[in-house]
Image 1 (cartoon, one colour):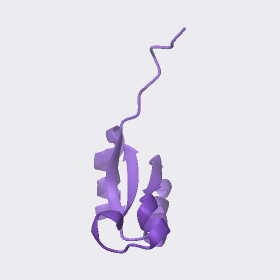
Image 2: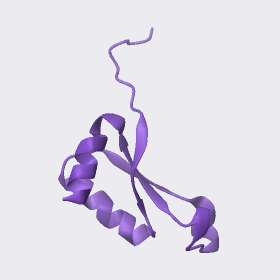
Image 3: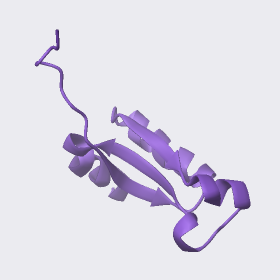
Image 4: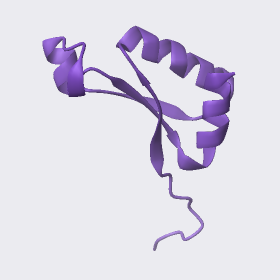
Length: 76
């Protein structure tokens, strides 16, 4: 039996960092603000060390419901 009261999380990109260390700093700011998030590194960029182009970023995702609050924290 499925519980219809469970909320569905729609993850959206709140920030794209240039590298993994920057992503951890951004994630720490979100954590301190109590915003659920996760880091989604680009696999090819990490494996091959790309630093430019489509395989150069590390996405930090948040629940769509928290997007405005997350961007306010990150821009503040």
